[in-house]
Figure 1 (cartoon, one colour):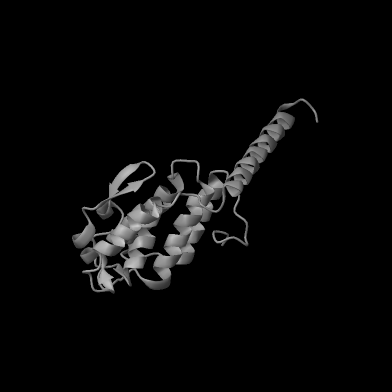
Figure 2: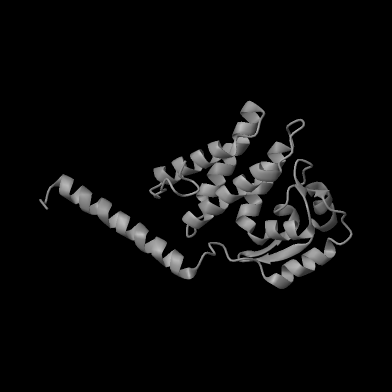
Length: 199
């Protein structure tokens, strides 16, 4: 390869690509756990405290019951109210669903913002497949961006909240996935068409 600007640029791009591949390989070797789950006993105690709640229940009832309870997360302690929206737009089918939500605190905090934005809309409930698709998109961003400061998750949560304010409607799950894919590609992460974000 010639020692000119074009050759040096190609070498730099190739090195960046190889570095991303090494990081991805290291992530895969660590397993499919981009964010370590909260300890099982923490969550078992949390479920026990929810026995007084009649499910399905709105998130507001869950927060009223256990919102002050703190749980151990990788970065310290966090109150459940910081992970579950104090909003009627979201409902939980069981205490196990609450447990699943708080098990991944980064994704839970993003979903809290989305649910609270949805709660500002009339006759809108964030449930079912749309909520699951949003959550899966955040999980995929966490897996791709596991070593960074969760910039992708924050950017897409901001984007959803902005769309709710501007259009007074929740964006479709496909639009959210597309926006997440654009963010990833713009920041040097490869997203293949056969992946969740590859729309």
